[in-house]
Length: 356
Ligand code: NAD
Image 1 (cartoon, rainbow, N blue to C red):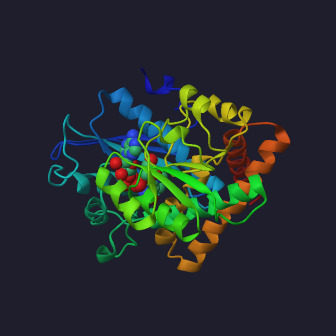
Image 2 (cartoon, protein in one colour):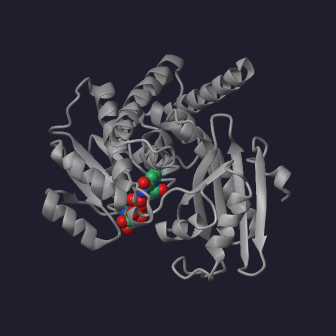
């Protein structure tokens, strides 16, 4: 398929194809929108089946970053990059110089795109990129960065989850509520800790049995089967593992009144946002709720302090409440209300640019 025919291409400002013969680099750097600021987004290292799949991923993900940054009210736009890994390529064993070549490709964009880590890339990769360009975030503390964003993401999820409970029940208190957490990775486990401290009961699952055993032991969580977690009779379901968990089958089986978790792209299709609404389930749109990671790297880029981060995490809760209200007022899915808020903010950026 031609790039221009890709459904996600139309709104992109710039898409760059970068290659480096010496290292075998083949990369796509997609800048979706810079009206609100430079395009920040992670770099995925992935063995795509074909080039179309890589282009589609870069376009789709960069578009999503624009919306995430706009709703989080950060002075950032949306971008994303993908490096085409060889089939079976081990993310831990990239060719020598590959990330430096990627750094030069980023540098040639003159700051319109700021790169960060994503699936298949690491803080060490960002350190290699940083030798070639200043337009990089997500370095380890020993390299001058702020390290893993996951604890901050978890704090944002927690704040948003509480706002969802307050909106639904009028109670700003999680004591006695039960939350099912799918996925006990970096974010899911940290979220469980915060929920436990706040007095919530936990039902947990993971493909890693040791992670489940640890949560049962240290947090008094109840273990659930990975196949059954979505239909657990709980107050809140927090998907913190995979995307596309909300589909026709799971919508019908859900027994939670609220869905609020970290995973990106939880709705298999946009229409599932409405399906949740029709079932009376309050959905906290994923990219609104999981913006803590972006807030963390934005703080790194703009040199903001911990108070600024805390304020922005509180902002997640306030924005979500506003989205819930707008969705109810307009009778639309919360996911649609979130998109509309992002689009309003992008139009405001246009208007401000015209007025300047
Ligand atoms: P992670 O890889 O550390 O954890 C994912 C966990 O999910 C792993 O423990 C894995 O074993 C488990 N898992 C995978 N498939 C599963 C299944 N079918 N059933 C149960 N468990 C399963 O990832 P993470 O950094 O914790 O991120 C979790 C999600 O949140 C991802 O979707 C990620 O894109 C999203 N997210 C993460 C951040 C961040 O700061 N890390 C920010 C925004 C969004």
